[in-house]
Image 1 (tube, rainbow, N blue to C red):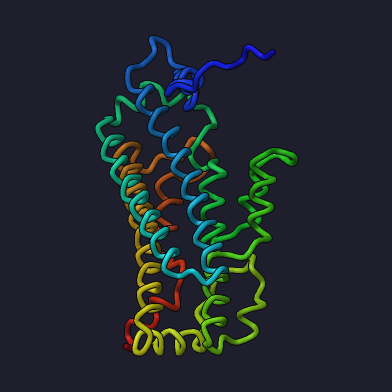
Image 2 (cartoon, one colour; image 1 turned 90 degrees about the vertical axis):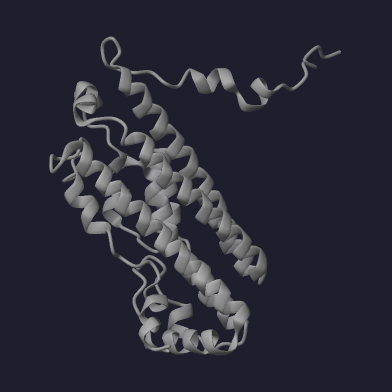
Length: 265
């Protein structure tokens, strides 16, 4: 008879002992602020995992034509993005000198190497061969990115949903290369204008996608300002140009058609 009948507790369910063993500063002392740096970034990776979980849910609900539930899930995604932005306020309590006290210990480690954030970008239509190539062949990260690269984006799920709603979405849009960037389409813009004028249900869904686009942009903007505040224009530890690279990503709309129609309504 098995004796492995220990009751599930808060600690065992959440594996608290394992979780608390994952924060290991590398600086001597260690430097006080390195713990904050580690905790914040580990929490970000957990939020990235949850965002992927929720964005996959949104795509699945759109595929099942459950737009109301998709909107509800998008609201959760937007709330998570706001929490992620708020966490930057905590990181900004660390002064440039406090960061410099342990920065050298990071060596080549950098948020630039977060495969989960790259996966989020892939889901939202910003795919890149170069992003995949940064990770070793056979690694978990590379495998996850290669899979995301071949899968339809959230925008593709939205277009197929609109086609099932009776809108005449051009066939070339429904069969487009899902690895290619989402480009503005006059034909899609005409459909969106019609939706905004005559279809309140789907107009609301469009607005949630705009909220998502804007929320990601807010995160990018706050992230670059945090980096500028902490290291100025120094190069990033992972081989990127630091704030320069991050600044180049600000302002790129994920769903350009939803922005293009603003001047036409």
